[in-house]
Amino acid sequence: MKEIVQQLLAGRVVGILRLPRSDLALQALEVAIEHGLRAVEVTMTTPNALEILQAARQRWDGKALVGAGTVLNAQEAQAVIDAGAQFVVSPILDAGMVETALRANVPPIPGVFSPTEIVTAYRLGAPVVKVFPAVTLGAAFFKEVKAPLPQIPLMAVGGLNAHNAAEYLHAGADMVGVGGALFPKAAILAGEFEGVAQTAEALAALSHLHIQHA
Image 1 (cartoon, rainbow, N blue to C red):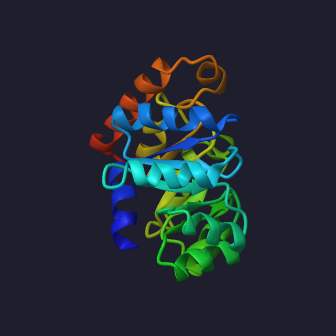
Image 2 (cartoon, helix red, strand yellow):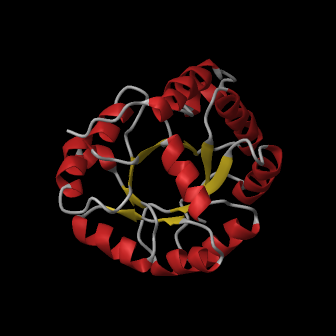
Image 3 (cartoon, helix red, strand yellow):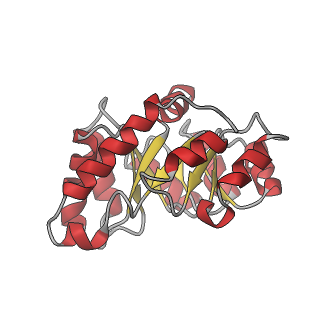
């Protein structure tokens, strides 16, 4: 588990796939990974999410980390882990999800919104805590909360894109998750993947960013 966490933190970016059509999901993931992304998350709201997860894990094993997102409880956590998820992400803090993932030696990344929830998630054993929706709180939130809680790795998710992600990393977020800006639904449904390629390249470059915390 420690190795996966280190890889996630080193890469700094997780691409979050949330599409209404499963037939385009693997294609979208392939473009992102081919253009440098090293961690992707298949959300449970995507049709046939478990099958996509399984196929993605087999296809990119050793090249990119494949996790599951929008995992809301212990049962869903077990299902995605059985399908091969290398990390498990949620928009909420559910103790059952965290415990199930830890038992399987898979990193859980639960979602929180306040300093109290950040600490609660960390005490439950979450190696990284997702702050969601990050854009509602703003980059300054990470600077403020990291001052008293520097030991807790934070992932900023919600409203992030290739243009503002660096701001959150400089402010104190340890990693970011980017969804709609990386996998634009309308463009992908129209068969357009150029935006995915360009955004993936820009986000992949963040792993080399020299961080200066404000």
